[in-house]
Amino acid sequence: MPDRDADPLIVAISSRTLFDMEESHALFERDGIDAYAAFQREHEDDLLTPGIAFPLVRKLLALNEGASPEAPRVEVILISRNSADSGLRIFNSIAHHGLAIKRAAFSNGAPPFPYIRPFGADLFLSANAEDVRNALAAGIAAATLLPSKAALQRHDQLRIAFDGDAVIFDDEGERVSREGGLAAFAEHERSHAGEPLSGGPFRGFLDALHRLQQAFPTGQAAPIRTALVTARSVPAHERVIRTLREWGIRLDEALFLGGRSKGPFLEAFGADIFFDDSEHNIVSARDHVAAGHVPHGVANR
Image 1: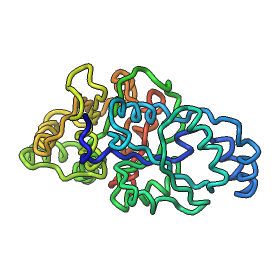
Image 2: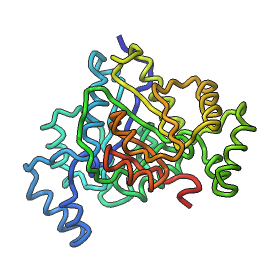
Image 3: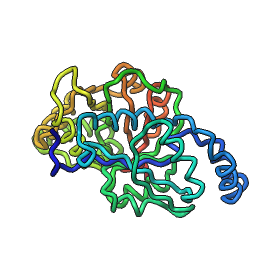
Image 4: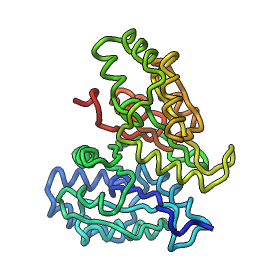
C-alpha cells in the first residue's frame, strides 16, 4: 500500500508538449490570440494528437497503478498559456486519451510559470524557452522540449537519462574546461576526486525520482530505469561516482562517453526523455529520443 504521507512526484507540463499543437501555435504567431481562440473553439470537438511528451506522461501516470487515488505516487499538472475557454479542447483530448490529469492553470497569454511552485512541481516541461528559463531562475528543474524525429514509444518501462554537469551537478567542471581546456579539467577533477560536486538544477528532481523508485522493487523488472549519459571519461568519472554515493542516489546505468555523440547511446538505452544543458547534444539526441534542453550554466550564457 502507498504511504499516504509520502509526497508524490509532481510534473508540470505545457499543453504544447503534451499534444501536437504546432498548427494552432503557428496561427497564434501569425494572426494573434483572438484568431487562435476562435480556432480552438471551432475545433473544440476535434481531438488533439499526442505530442512529444505524451508517452512520458502516460508512463508517469501508469506508476499510480495500485495506489489509492487519494495518495498517488505521481501527479501531472497542466500549465498552459491558453484561456480556460480555449483550453476546453485540451481537456476534451485529455479525457479521450484517458489521462488522469485533474489540476491545471490557464494563464490566458500571461507567463504561467509563477503557478508552478505553488503546485509543488518537481519538474516543468514546456515548449516555451522563456517560461523554462524563468522556472529555472526560481529554482525549479525545467527543460525546453522541441519536436523530435524519435519514435514515440519503445517499451513499457519508464527510462529517463540525464547529462551530469550543469544538469544533475553544477557547472563547475564546464567552467574549468572552458577556461583551461580538457587537460585542466582532467587535472581539476583528479585533484578534487574526494570532494562531492555541488547540486545542479535537476538535483531536487533526481531526489524525488529516486524516492519514487524506492516504492518499487529493484532490478531489470522495475518500472523506472535511469541513466547518467555524460561526456566525462576516466579519470573524471570518480568524482561523479563518489558524489552520487554521498547523496545516496541510485542511477541504474552510467555512460562515460569521452566526447562521443550521445544520440546513438540514448537510443540504445531506450530513453523516453534525456536532459542536457548543451544545445549541440540536444540536436544529436533529438534524432533518436525526446530531449529537453536545460538552459543553465556557462554553456548558456
